[in-house]
Amino acid sequence: MAGVSTKEIKNRIRSMESTKQITKAMEMVAASKLRHAQAQVQSARPYFEILHTTIEDIVRTNRDFSSPFFNQRETGKTVLIVIAGDRGLAGGYNSNVLKMAQSKLDQYPNAVVLPIGKRALDHFVSHKVPVLTETYAEAASVSIGDCFSIAKQLSKGFLSGEYNGIQIAYTNFVSMLSQTPATMPLLPLTCSEELRKKGEASGIKYEPSSEEVFASIVPEYLGGILYGTLCESRASEQAARRSAMDSATQNAEDMIADLSLKFNRARQASIT
Image (cartoon, rainbow, N blue to C red; front, side):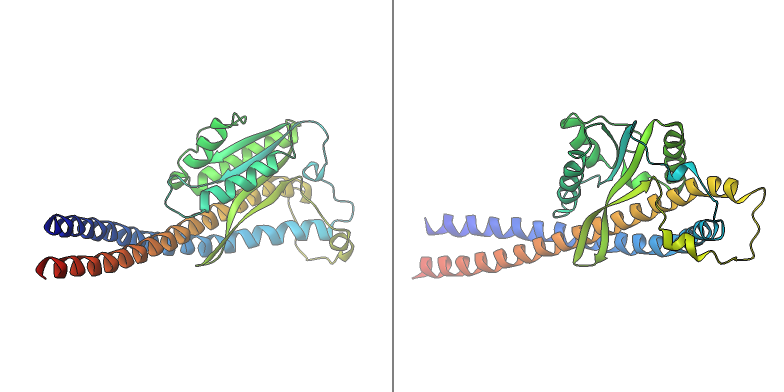
């Protein structure tokens, strides 16, 4: 009987060692992907900052400036872009952002979702939430070009009155140990009176006019925001997965140590 007991313990130790190898490998893969995602965030930031500065400059230096992108609308649907992952094993990454997005949807009865990522698509389809498109079901394959295409499509819908507002739900990468779900309004744009009152001329002349330049820049600006939040979400997912796999590896090591102690005790008992 003692021999059977030690055999069972030895099989469990082998199983835990195999699990430890898998979780350790997944941790290393997540760490590699995390570095790539952080590099994407850093490389996209200068372009986004230039567009943001140009938009502020146009609004600040044109006192009689107006744009339909600032218009508040009572009719039309609210679009919520939700970025989640394609797979699990990432701690609370997917559940946290989906829970926050669901609470946001409860505030807008006439809302439609644009899901990015398989987990987002599966969640909203199962909850029978209207989905704008299923084109971006694989978050890992969404490119910067896709982000600009989405932004242009939604901007066109906003200008036509089909949509009264556009928001995005994503996960903000704070640090390796902290990732927080967040929402950000995209349209309509908001502008404080303080910014309009500054009115300092920058010396830049926009052709054919500042309004037309502004109208062409806004979709690019929104595409930049979408790509930035996508990179933030990707970095958050890999950081969460790395942390989860590190914890799983540590748990496997603890179980192996505990089983090894039991194995030695059982073997000693069988000898005596």
